[in-house]
Length: 330
Ligand code: GTR
Image (tube, rainbow, N blue to C red; front, side, top):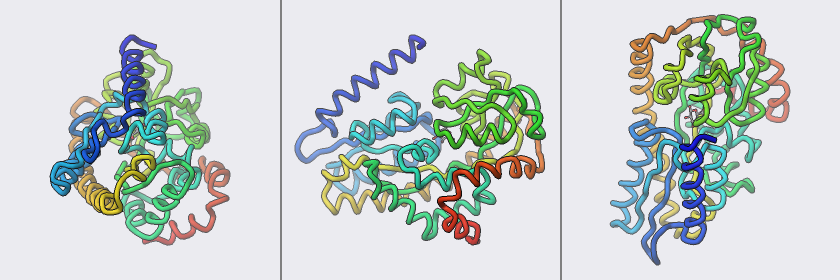
């Protein structure tokens, strides 16, 4: 563990301990909700949640406030999910990827190529299936209340050597998010999937612990991963995973029904605000990545689609009906 990471871990643990005894860090009626994100300040998701906080504060005349802890200072997504489950973090914006390990039903959205493209994913999360999945998360034993989706665009592969087809990935160690489904996905795509927290990927790329990773353009740029020599960005678009805004159930149960209703409404507003910021940010960061010398490799991704059929079969069998409905969504 590097000095910085161990300091962060200590800070996170102290914050965690303090939060257990005083989850809202405030007295009687006044609450300050602790919100967290792995992304830095200015990232669309962080901006949208901060804006939710401002609206919450205005609507409650300052009774409920929100404090954002961006940049993964409270840990990786796995750790932050755990902290949210016990109420040490009150509001978390996370990818659905690692949520699949605590609410297996959501893995249907984590399947490679389950959505045709980002527009298809949006149509699904905006419709009844999206609402059903939010309800499933909230009703699950995971102690998370899902109040809205966010956009994570499409994830593509970035490597130090150009990749055009599954065979080019042979022997390459590729970082994936923490969920066995993604390791299986990368293995099926031809590489060696390595599961690792987002905050560790930069050093892993620099030191050669991994040869590549995969993500959307805003994350690829803001994480600085492009500056480690991983400058080939192959447009595999293999995962289109929506992101999630969840409230700790421990926190939720302490709120009045009116405050719960307000949070739900603002969660949906944050979803739409993030979407607008998202589209702009994908365009902006694509330009920045190209400007920084990243080569965007356009491919026909059918070979990767075919290669991952076994993953859809293994993890999708139990969601066969839902997958049919997803496919039928226009
Ligand atoms: C990003 C996502 C984060 C995190 C990260 C990762 O696209 O917004 O929530 O999951 O990917 O790869 O760990």
